[in-house]
Length: 233
Picture (spheres, rainbow, N blue to C red):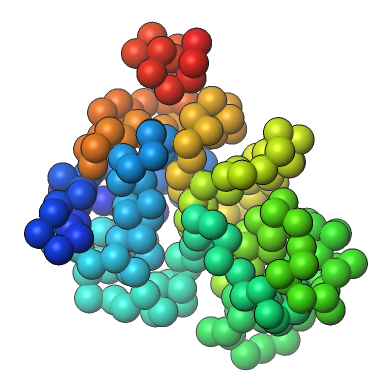
């Protein structure tokens, strides 16, 4: 579904991605783990079209994305739930969700919203309240639901567990696992390496803008180098 080859990106004169190769197959949950500053968020921003690419290629469902602007990538089936949630705090929960579906104008939007409420019942309860009044966990649920309103075939999830209590982290990861049943492919970026690898099919470990290790999730969890450096085992 998604193939990244030799991807390079820079901020000004400083290159931060140094030739990333990555593949996501349809129906998979693939995670990218690594320390803060490794380039994980930049990678997702390049795929979604927010961050300029200085080299390499991004192929999505057989189409080269190099010249496709970010807003058109949503119509192609790519949605991103960004790091830090970035919800619209002054708008209601329902208004946030409708903005996630801004590229659509059909009867499915209301049905999609009902699906989002079924996945996150607390959002239905608070649908008419300002999103800024939600707890951190509820805001993360809203960010994921808003991305799903774009009807993605591939969902880019950036640090969904950041700043959440352990019980909420477990809940968010269960939601990510459940997306498989909805035929949503997931590319998950996480600092919580063990949690991410526990629900993923495959994984990549990034270090300073490069892929250091890759393999099945089980292989990475068993790798002594990964266990010592990223899993605290």
